[in-house]
Amino acid sequence: MTPDDETQEAVFRALADSSRRRLLDLLHARGGQSLTELEEEFAMTRFGVMKHLRVLSDAGLVVTRKQGRKTLHFLNPVPIRLVHDRWIDKYTEPQVATLAGLVPLLEGASPEEG
Image (cartoon, rainbow, N blue to C red; front, top):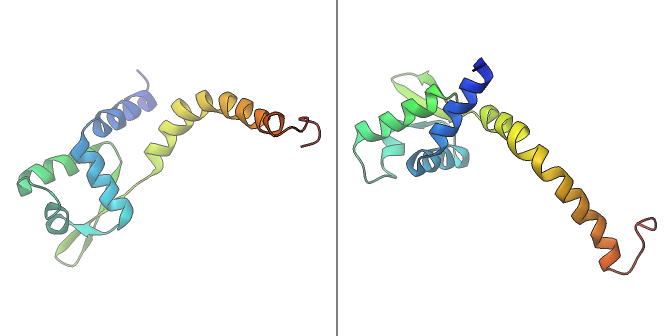
């Protein structure tokens, strides 16, 4: 397994859990949240939220930065984009192009007319 494969495997494992996906959604909506702010959104212990953040951090999906006494958490969208480019985009492009070509036909125009 190559390092890229291992990285993407960690991303898929991290995304497999609904609590971790919710954490990513919260950080997407507003980056730079502290552990205290994030734990308020969950019915789990502080330790549980920390554990999920660790998995996300290990997968490269969350980065942290110290600001004074606080540690702030931010979404890193790059690993998700890499997964998208490798696993989603290449499989959806032909279908999307085909559907886009059908629009003029369904609307009564020839594809050459646009």
